[in-house]
Image (tube, rainbow, N blue to C red; front, side, top):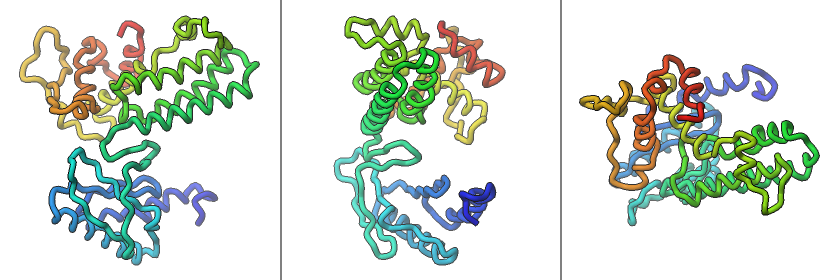
Length: 297
């Protein structure tokens, strides 16, 4: 049964591959036809475990008459060590290629978990889309152009932003430039003397940086209320509440590096703890979103 010709096709495919993680010691993540296998490598023994898991995947292929294409399988080592453990992993007796970056579910990951490359990719793509809209929708109304921006441009630079939300000023500036170019397109004001700040205010567009902050806080609400399948055990209430803390505050998460400091949990806990009590204790997700979106927050 072809997945493209049946509503049941995708579901049947998922049932078909659902047992891939069985017997695998490494962590396995499945999403449609993308399979991710990863393990913390601290010694040569760990390398052997990962290689054994690859061999088990070959056995799964044989059993179910499926195939992983070695040329489409890569090895990405994520570390900040100067001399990480190097190992040649095999699939079908073919050495898998080591890469310094790879795209997973639409997000470009690299060996240092630095999302600058991803931001470069999405800003270039968004800029190309703005150029296309400008050429083909130049005489449209502000309403039509706004809808085009919100449909085709902004999602490109906001997809999965809770994962890669930057703190680097240059990355933040590059993302904001996308919206500033879009404001000129929507208002049809391209002269250098035209104030983009005034355009953004007239259009009532929040900065992309603020929208990403709100997206992280919404995700934190979902995690805390167990509305998503993300472990909330690391969210620990403080030993005692001070006067300036709301009832849903968490202990701040210490970090020994900038990478850790600006990652999702440490960064978002800081933002979460600064929320007004009535927002942090909102009784529903919709109520939380509504109150969070108010300009004063």
